[in-house]
Image (cartoon, chains in turn blue, cyan):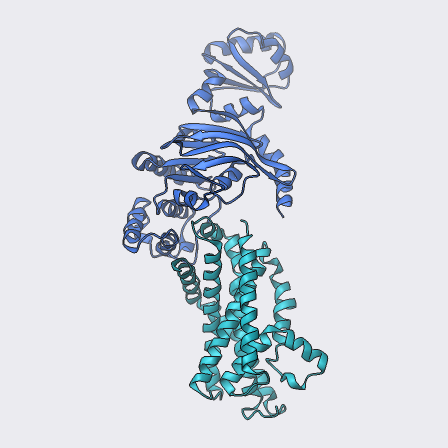
Amino acid sequence: MYAIAVENLVKKFGDFTAVNNLSFEIKRGEVFGLLGPNGAGKTTTMSMLSTMLKPTSGKASVNGFDIRTNEDDVRKSIGIVFQDQSLDEELTAYENMDFHGRLYRIPKDTRQKKIAELLKLVELDDKKDNLVKTYSGGMRRRLEIARGLLHEPKVLFLDEPTLGLDPQTRNHLWDYIAKLNQEKGITIILTTHYMEEADKLCQRIAIIDKGEIIALDTSEKLKNDIGGDVITIVSSGRDNLYSAIESLPAIKNIELHDSSITIGLQNAEKHVAQIVNIASENGIPIDSLSIHKPTLEDVFLHFTGRTIREEEASTKDKMRMMLKARR
Amino acid sequence: MDIVYTIWLRNVKRYLRSKSRMVGSLGMPLFLLLVLGFGLNSVVAIPGMEQGYIGFIMPGIISMSVLFTSVFAGIQVIWDKQFGFLKETLVAPVSRLEIMLGQTLGGATTAVIQGFIILVLSLFLGLDISSISGFGIAVIFMLLIGVSFTAFGIAIASRMDDMHGFQLIMNFVIFPIFGLSGALFPIDSLPAGVRFLTLLDPLTYGVEGIRYGLLGSSQIDPGISFAVLSGFTVLMVVVGSYLFRKISV
């Protein structure tokens, strides 16, 4: 049995299709990433899986329970850390935890024991009686994660868990998440638009764009699809350069973008000279050139033809439409 | 029931913790009580009122205090929506009805405490409670006002996305409800048209009920007041639960 199974899931807001025919499965104990730009449908998917939103059509189950017919069992099986903060700032950390424990009907003895244990895990036990409004962003996130674990969920949903945190705190949180998965065997589904985050944490990654999965595999395999290395060339004569080097045997794939060309190939160091030579023979200027191991950013670019940044600019209009439709 | 208690507990804790809100919302009723009470006491004579005008408006001001606190407590659901805390409760394996009832009882409790403070202060200003049972009656009516108007606030909050509309609600709904309620004037001496409006105002029955409890006399029969206000309370809880069920965040 899968921890999460999704079949042809669709969500529409008016005319706008936020999630289009999504299907995937997540194994127990897996860390699964939904990676995509803002407005790609990640949060909408999470909301449906956590029973906060009703799907327009399609099926999904979490921990074996149908999200449409068995909401309560789904809710008992999951812990959630929302994209936006969901703590009560006027209460202390302990009271926030206690409130959660009572809501999930955890008996008093177990509740107190688990709260102490979890606050220790996220290193907040010495500040447990401080009001949450005195907490920093990173502390709040840690508290939310601890809270999400209080009722011992089988699946933990993390919606952009490190959004807006400084790099140091982010690294710290990644360690926690990895530890949780290893020590407690909790299945984790997380959304992110940080390539680095998905790369570091997730065993498998679904790249999602405009409500559809465009690639789903391990981060290694996704990167191998591109070729061993990536050369990015920024040039004003990129059209000419493209046709000049297109047929080189060493090149596994080559793509033309708005301002650059990306080339996937093995042993880039060996072939870069050849490419530069061809460019200068044809009198094509090269503004910049870089060689790097492929990142998920390259993967995204490879599958969608756009960088995540370009994508975010164009989805803004869609987001507005969606907000209007929801009103 | 334990869930209702949990939500109630959170509301009461928050209330007890925000001293400034507690003191702040005492200002207006106390101000009205002193200014109107002492200011008009010598000019206004109400037939059959031995305690004078200030005695007459005390139950009205207590109602006002309960009314404002409870509507505000209900509308606070919008804050929870905006600051995300509502999600935490909505995604838990509990029913919306339990959450709504917890919020309502929590808000009503804080409103009654607030009204109770005015009541105690009124004692120093010459309020003379007729009997223990009368005091009990007053508390019951305060509770009914508290529950019905917190539910009313929740109903409004369920349909609002942010606090922008709050001023609108205050000026065009809550103030008229207070103004028309007979908290500040006897309804018997009103022209027929206005009197009809005051009788449509649910708060009128709350004010009259409390007045009966504290002063021993009222212009509307306390039985009728109780029946009307109870009916209104049930209606508001039903409407509030219905709208709250459809809330989405």
